[in-house]
Image (tube, rainbow, N blue to C red; front, top):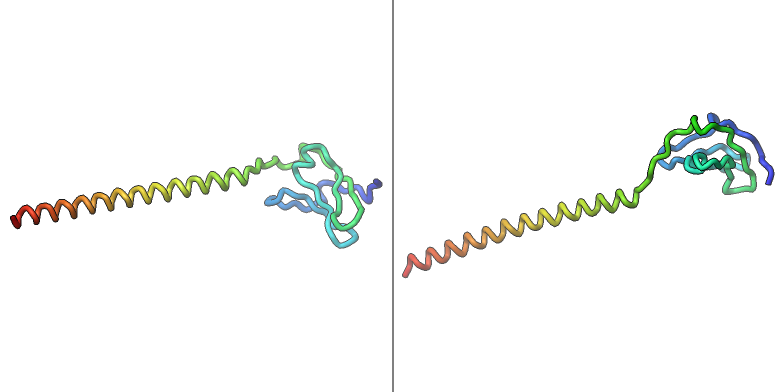
Length: 116
């Protein structure tokens, strides 16, 4: 396929959250390429709405560092920590309840022995 245009890396828009570079396409949509793809040596950005493609002119030294996205692991780790914290709270409440019950039993026994 042919290249519609050569675009300098500096002319691309970058979204640091998604790590995606974009550039306006004449069709009204945007060409896009990921930072990871650029680090992998890819230099062709495609438009999802038409057949046009652009070539990105860049040096790897100009790229920002690639963020290691372990979002699924991070989220599940956070959920596990939350669950562990919740379980610990429940265990502590359970221990407090046991102590309260033991105290109440001791009070009832003491009263019952005093009455006799």
